[in-house]
Amino acid sequence: MVIILKKDISERDKEELKSVLNRHNFKLNEIVGDEDTILLAAVGSSSIEIRELEALPGVSRIIPISKPYKMASREFKREDTIVEIPNRRGQVIRVGGQRLVSIAGPCAVESREQILACAKAVAESGAVMLRSRAWLRSSPYSFQGLGEQALLYLREAGDEFGLPIVTEIMSPEVLPLVSEYADVIQIGSRTMQDFDLLKKVGGAKKPVILKRAYTATLEEFLMSAEYLLASGAENVILCERGIRTFEYGTRNTLDLAAIPVLRTLTHLPILVDPSHAIQSRDRVSPMALAAIASGADGVIVDVHTNPEKALAGGVSSMIPAQFDKMMHDIEALAPVMGKSVAHIREEIRERKTICAYSGKRGAYAEQAITRYFDAADVEPRAVKSFSDIFQDVIDGRADYGMVPIENSLAGSVYQNYDNFSRFEDVTIVGAVTLNIRHSLLAVKGSSLSDVHTVYSHPQALGQCRKFLEQHPDWNQIEVVSTATAAELVSQNADKANVAIASNVNAKLYNLEVLFDDIEDDPGNFTRFVVIRSKEKLVQNREVNVSPNMASFIFKTKNEPGALCRALGIFEKHKINLIRLESRPMEGQPWNYRFYADAELSGLQGNVKAEVETLLGELNEICEATRLLGIYFENRR
Image (cartoon, rainbow, N blue to C red; front, top):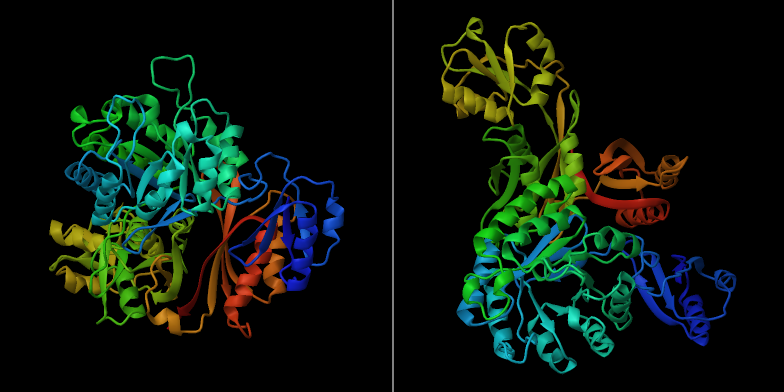
């Protein structure tokens, strides 16, 4: 059972509850949640009545668990577990949630040169962890592995390219040695039900990838995960790698149907290893993509720079070019699944603070950057799209991102609401509102009578509708940003073309201002939010300014009054909601998540603590909640 304690439970009442459970032979596991909600998981069997426990002081409610696996069950933990694995560069790789991870490397470490070459190849193509084996037992007559020497080579390769290393353990005797070198311990399919090994690995408290045995049912698979969790492992990742059937066309049958089934049964992250099921390098990529489409959190694949000469697993090992193509395909598939691909962040060297924005030099977002930051200390970096802003911040190519979220005339930038749902590893640290003033720009010597085509961002075209209605014969061409429009007009050097953009672009692109202030309403403002990675603590202005805003994402239950109850929590805490948007959820027709902005200026005392208390209460009645950030908004 899962016993949810009241937040104000006294230590005396908690100890009394533990004493009662111990007398009835329950094994206890106390968990502190993200919002300081304390859960006490009791595993065991007893004749004690649940009503007796619910009556004890400090108990909020009890959730019975009927499954034989307790801590691995979805009943034990409603939200998905995200396993955090640090690399030696200070970055954290997150397995689970909205990120897709790729783990790659040769079947076995054969030499220092081989593992370094493989690590370089997979890192360049986008892998975030390096996998290989130091010991093998496929046959007493085949290559047995290099043992500790392999671990040394593997560690060196992982450190060289910023990749945490994953390696398999086959016996408890080598656990101390493997724990010293490896970031993640893998339990292979042959040892999935070696329960003595599982207990010892669980006690090591390292992240564990547990592979499904080719003869195991899903219940047996989860029971093995339960052994790890019950023995102390806090970060367990499941891996489907094929089951044995009557089919001989492949080594095993890759059971992709297990992924959506496991999603309903467990909160643990799920990876797929197509290499060891398919046993043919040409078929690995389509099965990896199918695994992602089935809902997997990532893939583990074999990659070798010279598989024909591999000492183990050569027939199933992809060549680097195949792996690179697969990673590009996963990048294309990820947005369809409402996810993004995890990347290793580049090392941050001493330099100016970099803030990414979408567009070209002269974009309004660039002006917002110089408004928010000290212009002498920041380097604006243009990227191609809004999603690239988020990705650059997560990967470390930028310290911050400047993201437009709404315009007073054209409305919300819905693409960025969706980006906040896709990219879970960012937080809002600030906001700035910019007065948007549009000008009509043309090549020098042009006049209004020359114009046939106008270029601009679709929102800018919408914001200048009244002006454009006076020229119904003009072709309207949408481009990625207003600054891009100015650049195109400058490059074409055609008097028939004009751009709607900020007048600062006239000097940047050697253009002439035909008209200033052509927007429909002088009260034309765009609100930008400033984002940064959760992984990277940057000492900057947001640390020292009292917050006056908070932003949230939440999904209510599909029942009458659910949204009303959620909004009532904001009213209870005297927090003023100033914006509420609904967005459809990918792959879930007629299901929506809500994005909310709230003013905090009326709160007294510890603002952060009040918001966290609100979030905890919101989490109790909603299916999912997320705090996007507590921050200061500059409204100059």
